[in-house]
Image (spheres, rainbow, N blue to C red):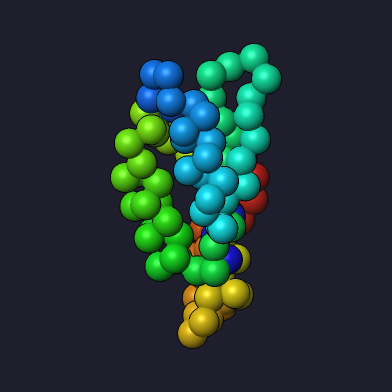
Amino acid sequence: MPIMSYLAYPAEGRKEELLAALESIPQCEVRVAADQDLLVLVTDTGGTEEERALTDRLHGLESLALLALVAGFDDPDTEPGTDPRRNTAPPLPTDSHGGDQ
């Protein structure tokens, strides 16, 4: 279940068009920035493949000038067929000298 947040910069003079396009996509939630000519976009998809397809769709919007990823979260427990134990970081190396120096 990838959840991503973006700053979406519209092409010049196309902010309302971009807003309408993003609002028509079910996986998107859009907010208009009060003082800037940009939109705040949060996407919530069912998995990695759906997120990739959505990203491709977003980049294909002619009213979009720039899409800047701000943050992303993906819970591997929600991906079908994944083993969350394989998504853990390796242990930190230990000090071979036996203490802090």
